[in-house]
Length: 173
Image 1 (cartoon, one colour):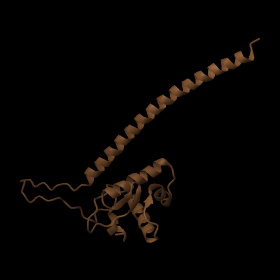
Image 2 (image 1 turned 90 degrees about the vertical axis):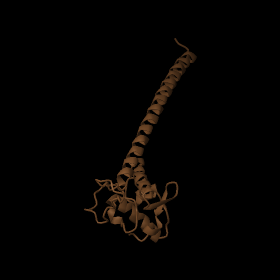
Image 3 (image 1 turned 120 degrees about the horizontal axis):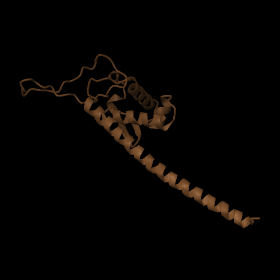
Image 4 (image 1 turned 30 degrees about the horizontal axis):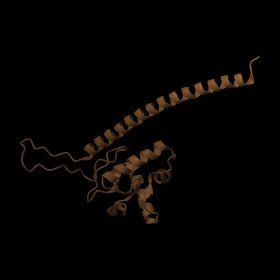
């Protein structure tokens, strides 16, 4: 009949092996997570870069190459807002109506916060005000949109992750 100490030692050895196995699996998962996060970050950067390039006004190219080539300015009342469209760079005479509905909602939430005296909002507060599920994917989506609006001059990032409407946009135009 095996001794109690012998049985405990056998279980301890099995537990140690299980711990080592789980540690190895954890290390593998952490490495896989880091690779996935790096791939995600590269895609976010690529998407933002493409959006930025697409939002810049193309140079008007004259066939003869004349010296008076100027950037083509899009009309503020362009053929309508397309959901998920590119955020244009803010300039005089360009109203919020050129933004897609998702971006307009963010602008309206922040403008309302300013009117009520609440001040800047972090992305979690924005996601909550937009009635989005408070999960990382939704909050990051709001963060991406807010950063894009800030990069284009529609919002100001007061402190990292805290946004408010740019001064001349507080009136909702």
